[in-house]
Structures are given as structure tokens and as C-alpha cells.
Amino acid sequence: GAVVSQHPSRVICKSGTSVKIECRSLDFQATTMFWYRQFPKQSLMLMATSNEGSKATYEQGVEKDKFLINHASLTLSTLTVTSAHPEDSSFYICSARDALAGTGELFFGEGSRLTVL
Amino acid sequence: GNSVTQMEGPVTLSEEAFLTINCTYTATGYPSLFWYVQYPGEGLQLLLKATKADDKGSNKGFEATYRKETTSFHLEKGSVQVSDSAVYFCALARAGNNRKLIWGLGTSLAVNP
Image 1 (cartoon, rainbow over the protein chains, first blue to last red):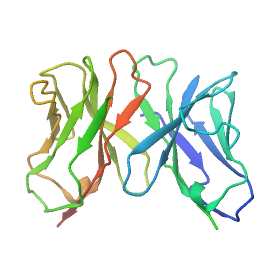
Image 2 (image 1 turned 90 degrees about the vertical axis):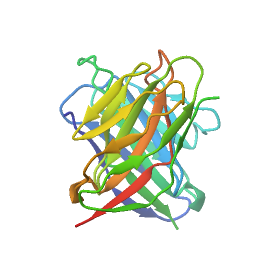
Image 3 (image 1 turned 135 degrees about the vertical axis):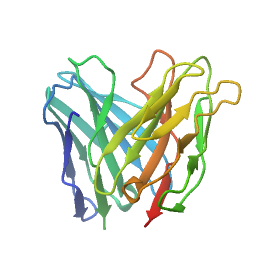
Image 4 (image 1 turned 135 degrees about the horizontal axis):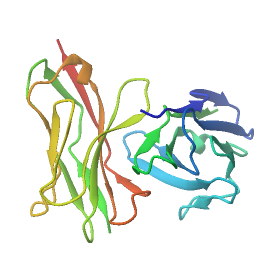
């Protein structure tokens, strides 16, 4: 199946710094990618929909200035957690849909665990 | 609103045991239902899906039947293997909006040899 890769898989940073997480579709083009957040013992929460070449669509309650999303190409979307704080520590997951396959299936990255000290 | 309720884990079974992971949902209209699996160190993968009532999704020996009368989509496998150890997520997508999945909490399954 199609492959989505996230990098880094784990990152530890100091409070106040910014962290960038990359999501790449390795063997297909994705006009739309999705960013999720998962807290321990909770379900995945959709944060935003990343659209290639246009602004991301954020879910209610998600701060767009806090979580900057850039989808500059058909194979790459980035999530930047700005001025990170300990409460931003979480597991971030991206997913993408093959724009050409038309099956509607979502492919997920391995996730990125962010720990803010 | 729409929601998914999954049985809490962790679930621990011996190899070749029968597996059931319960999933019930609330939704307006006729949602599509999914089971995703996350193996250790890997991303989520679609395991199976069903798009209308009475549909049965199946893959890798796993099955789930879309039961509208009981609003359920329970995951079953007749004989689990050690390699089935993973976290299983039930999810639904509202009719006509497969982009926005609503997720259960996930159920961790450990299969011992």
C-alpha cells in the first residue's frame, strides 16, 4: 500500500522553542493531508486539514497561530508547533489520501511524539 | 452528535483464542464504519470497512458486520496469532464526508504464544 512517512518520530524540546514535524507521501501525490493529535488513553483528534497550495482548515478549538501548517507540495506537509509548552506534549499523526487512486482510503504516518520540557 | 465507543483494553489472549472487540456508535444518517490497526512502531492501517447496513468487512481473518439495529461494528477473529498484537481503532465517517473520521479510544491487544 501507499506509504506516509513522518519525521521526526520523537522529539524533545525546551519550553518556548518551536518544533517542526514533516509528513511525506512517499509514493503518491496527496492534495490533502490531515493532522491529528492523540493524548494518552484518548482517541485521535483531528486538528486540521492541510490543502496543497492553500491555507489549512483548522478544527474548532485549534489555534492556527500555535500550530502552523504548510502544504507546499503534493508530497509534503509540515506542522510547526510554535512556542511549545509542556501541555503541547502529545503524539501527532498525519494522514493523506492518494489524490489519483480515488479509493478514498487514508494512509497514516507512524506518528511523532513530542515532549516539551 | 456522532461518536464511537470501543471496549477498553488491554485485551490479553493466548494464541488461537477467539477475539471480539466491541464497537458501538451513534450517528445521524448512514455513516461508513472502519477498523484501523496500529502495529508497534508503525502507522495506522485500514484493516476493514463497511459502508452500509449488513455489510461485512473482512481482511486477514478479521471480520466486522455493520449492524444498524444495534448500532454496532464489532471486530472478530476466530483464531488470533502473536502477530495480531496491536492497537485496534474503530472509527466512523459521516455519510458523504469520508475525510473526517470520528475515532474510538483504541483497544490494545496482546497475544501470547
